[in-house]
Length: 147
Picture 1 (cartoon, rainbow, N blue to C red):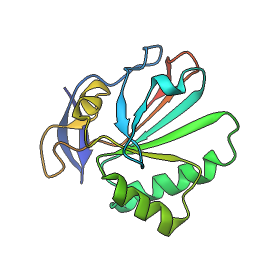
Picture 2: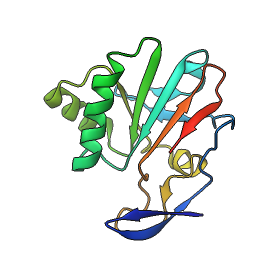
Picture 3: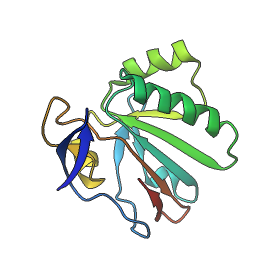
Picture 4: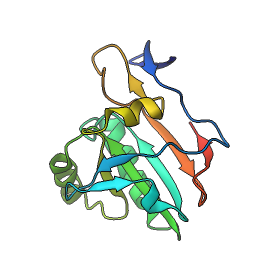
């Protein structure tokens, strides 16, 4: 287990955070239309995973807006914004904010995703949600950046 900070206090997260050079762990997350969104579907493409607790927090909402702006300028790069928010809440947020260049996906049916990617908050008021992280995956499914 690793530690992250929430409001200046350390909290534990479960799982192993991926390192550069690791093969990205497979996943099946929930898309806006309630279908599965898998890592395998993006094989051969560059992928950015913007992972966060909830779009209903100010910092997380700002990251989605920023990634949306940057994604519009990135040719050949797909951005997945991943939280435990229900797809309905994400769709409402995207509609209100004009978000259209990132793909919002939910881990609400896949708690193993958060453990597999080492971001499962294990204690405190946000336990069972994801810590904020950014992971970049190349066309071969290898991690090329993680923070």
